[in-house]
Length: 291
Image (cartoon, one colour):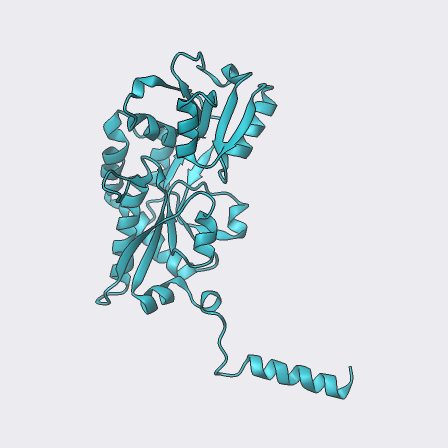
């Protein structure tokens, strides 16, 4: 390298490390620092993941995951002591939920997002918050009682969900001659199911249960009892932000240790006659991590 070129490189390096130089806020600032600077804790929530995350008739965020996140918000406020932190809920859809956390639009996504290794290449997850599996909903009277009954049917699946790959794998492995049709979201899927445009709608079983529970006529639907996937849920947070993740995980673990999670489960799920599944009970116990 020529002397002049070497000098230019050294000058550039010096400029980059000058005390006055700053990296973009989103790259250099942790979530706790961002919350302290803005005075706001931004929670992203889904509107179509009933009974975990949705909007009630008054347009307010509601559900199991939302209540868990309200508990987390209390933990965040406690972390800052006397500093006044305002909690704000922001709508996110299936497509943008991951990117909204990455780009700082929200600080945490509280919905029904499955923890996967591929997603952990972009973001991190909190302690598990729920466990379910993929299943299929159809209109009663169509004769769909099991996954094998889906041959010849069109199955709607919401875009941007892990259900797509899991369902595709299941029908191929079991040689079920069904066609997968991608819908915009769960609301679109239910609309197409009700109109007969698709023969079934696939999603996580707990979400399908929520759709049926809130329907005007629950008896209109039939839910396949078997599941075709394992779906552990967690809340999405920024990658490599250990300090914020620890504050969130402390709040979740305390919720499990106190037993308050049982009240939240009954409020949103147990009241419709569903008991805590053994796998979910084990998840609660395993993540009641001591302080």
